[in-house]
Image (cartoon, rainbow, N blue to C red; front, side, top):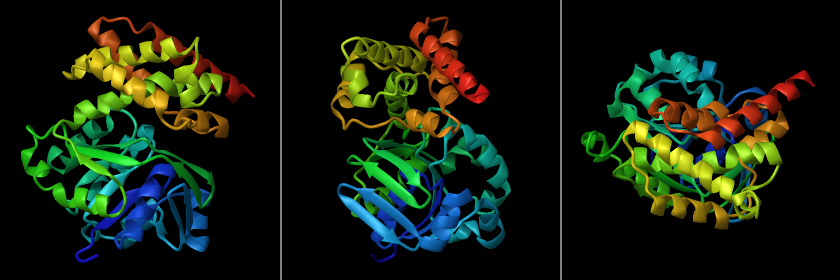
Length: 322
């Protein structure tokens, strides 16, 4: 690939590692930021990706955040791809803000769950550097350090935050990223209203993530279950109500389309279910909490979201007590 792009992937979990490996295979320069045993294995044995349509096994450039800030210059990269858990976005920005401001044009693309990551990035770096994004129809998890299993078409939707109309200059410069992703086998769509797309994805996350953590069921089982499917749909409706607090209107056709998508997509474990099984922090507040809080601000009921949020919180407290 001529004039290949240089990417910094912060968060080399299931999503970040998969997309980063795709970009590497296409000839792009990719640096992964990881931590703990996963980082150690990536540094010594490389990274392995198992996907029905894509396999990767080889050496990668993986560093810690400390090594990144001490040994790398932000000018080495064309794009930062942020794929960490949403709950760590603000602390990560606090840690890296001084380093990131050394290159005041380096854009940051969030491929995270939730609807507040881009807002936090824009507050720290400016909207002119903030690209909203979402990973669509992909399941990806760290099976063990250095090994990722992924499934699905693994599409990406991205756009200037909060939308093309309010951030036209950045939107006009995103074609190269889209073309590079497409060439790497990552089907990518450029959205004129990425905030709307993020809320549409939150409909799905609010519909299945907390319920899966409670029941241990995969997405397809939940959305097709005779007793639970109506709850999945109602949770999605409550998320659509919450979107009104951000000035986003999501009608019944969009809710139906999102429900159809999750009902027919591969049966996958949600990230929240995997996290609760592995004893890792959940994105509960960033998903159900965000919906419940916005509904409270609007004076609208979010009965089911409040309930599943409370039940998952109780389950986590019970786990903590052993």
